[in-house]
Image 1 (tube, rainbow, N blue to C red):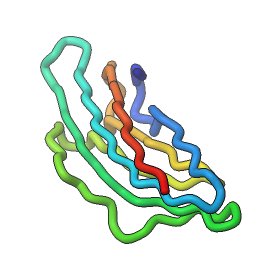
Image 2: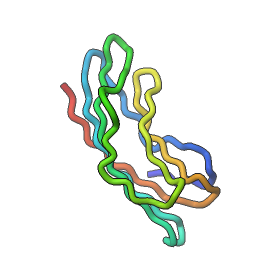
Image 3: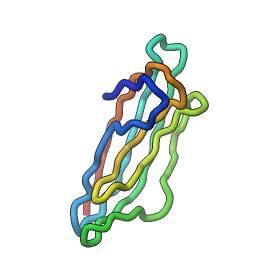
Image 4: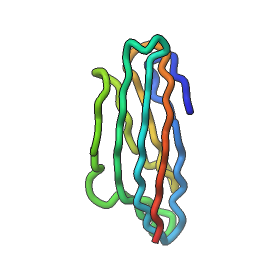
Length: 106
């Protein structure tokens, strides 16, 4: 759970990708402005691999569901051996975010 109050990009979840493993990541994200005048929902999936401490994404990110006000964005960002789930509203408003992550490792 995360509350954003500015237009800055924020990290809502950090997903470690184990060495020499492949991880399919599914995320569901819900968001609402504090007065409920704006709300959003997102569902994304992607597959990541860690080959000797070098993380890469296999193919494109599946944007299964993306319903939110303009400027609200949820994205995956690779940082070292982690994948960050990042959110932004694009405006200085109070938004509550919640992220559910499901992973499948092989």
